[in-house]
Amino acid sequence: MNFDGKKVLVTGGAGFIGSHLVDGLLRKNADVRVVDDLSRGSLDNIMHCENKIEFIRGDLMEPKIAESVLDGVQTCFHLAAVVGGVGFMNSHPSEILRSVSINYNVVDACWKKNVDKLLYTSSACTYPVDLQTAAEISPLKEEDVLANGAKPDGDYGWTKLLGEVQCQAYHRAYGMKIAIVRPFNPYGPRESFDPRDSHVIPSLIRKAVLREIPFVVWGDGSQERAFEYVEDLVEGLILASEKKVDADPINLGSSTPVTIRELAELVLRLTGHKTPITWDTSKPRGVRSRKADMSKALSIGWKPRTPLKEGLKKTLKWYLESKRN
Image 1 (tube, one colour):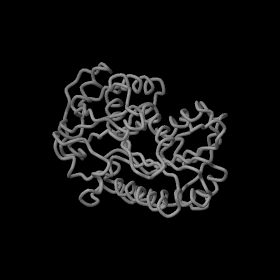
Image 2 (cartoon, one colour):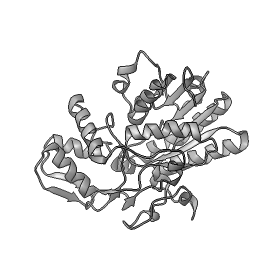
Image 3 (tube, helix red, strand yellow):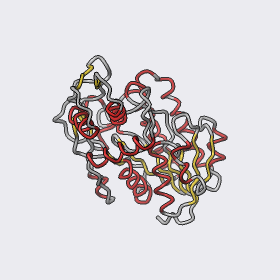
């Protein structure tokens, strides 16, 4: 797909992943419009390119806003959602479910406005929890989501799965060209470091930089995650938008996991914080193991390239330079 001069909308484009996607699209000479309500995103994330994009502050819970921001748009990358770390998602179920309305409004508006192509960003949280209870499980295949009935991971997983169902229905009913991607544990610069809603990597980095003692980590450290650096993910989003049109979901992740213990120890080494880890097993720990089958991603020519240590160094550098607490 040639993005040169094409009008592209990024919903949630002032957020962590969205702002990196904006950068990637600008490198391809796209005419980028961003819509974000700034409830989680920040203008700081797009300030470096504010003169190159059109920014609209708007709440996609409102159908009229969803339709207006899609005027003249040829490709829509839909990333806007209510999201946070495991603690936030367990304690804010009603907020999380706002994403159901956001997804409906955006997909329906894409159809009404005759948008050429929609990329819907789903999540690895669509996979059943019972497939992620042991370290020795096989990597998750896309068809596993509904193989034995829908059993997504929490309210957030339900919102993402319902969005997939809507996309597939609109593809069948109207022939809409839609790509669906399921990212697995992305991390990197511009992610939220706010302790109220941060994911595990920014949470660990913040605690280590602030030299917190005790250095508390949720769970017992045996949990496994296969992390992916945000710039690698952006390449996958753009490639999927070019190669996928059939609303058939595709994993964008890794089949090589790391334990939270290994992750925490690596963060401590990189920051020079010499302290033992205190494990808090009373807090939510998430699923035991999550890793992706990469067959479909490899078939379109994508795989993650950034080693975890390298990605953590880049994330740490950004955090220290941005002085975000």
